[in-house]
Length: 340
Image (cartoon, rainbow, N blue to C red; front, side, top):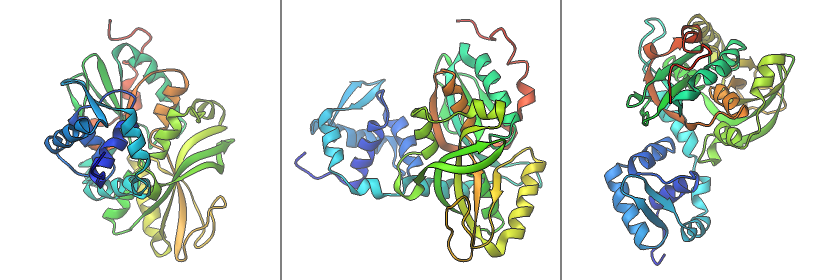
């Protein structure tokens, strides 16, 4: 490319590089927003035209969108700065700030992760998810559902598919922020559980240095054993490491009580002030805490071979759309409610 890529062009190429299928401008815009880059689909289409002309991308069709060409991958590899941008960290902060949920009134918006699956997989997916949430390996016991054509947390459900949304662990950040408590999200990782207790992190990714939700990356790599953990208490699950000001610990504990009363879990364990937690050091004046991954139910689906498209940290959804998992028992009956 004769002209050097700017930050936005590089971000568009990065999004295309992380998806196997072609993508349209609207879908690219949603992915960029999760990285902390807000740009309209119209502007993206203009930029994609220039990237096409440069031989970095190609238009599969007007409906299917673009895919990345080998030259685009080579060009992207030369752009080192984009790997240092804390896109995920920025998205976490944006969503925590925009969340409007008021626990005392049980109303407002919360942050969600969305998976879309083929209709005939719904029964099996719900049967897999139920024991995961029952074992406390998700952010509470609630789930949201959407039919094809509906919009769930900003994701329009494609034809022939249905959408399932889990509560995102960043809800913890949002609820604490509403109390004036800042949360530092440091790492996303894989946590070893033994007999129902957290033992150690076996993998960690710094939020400040990634363009993709760490747990999403681990799920796609098949590195979890959430189903085994739900069944036996031992396995590898997704979790994150965060820090809160030590002076706010009492308020943090009160917020935890509010979440539990609402059927939301979240914090697996909180450390001691100024002391390492599971061998991870914390800054002076801070306390570490380990938060369970909201996408663990989807990890369990991946483990048994249920295919899905995943949108992590996708956006905000109204609290009223999330129902306790017991409300889905009818849907989880053995015969599928859908016929191909």
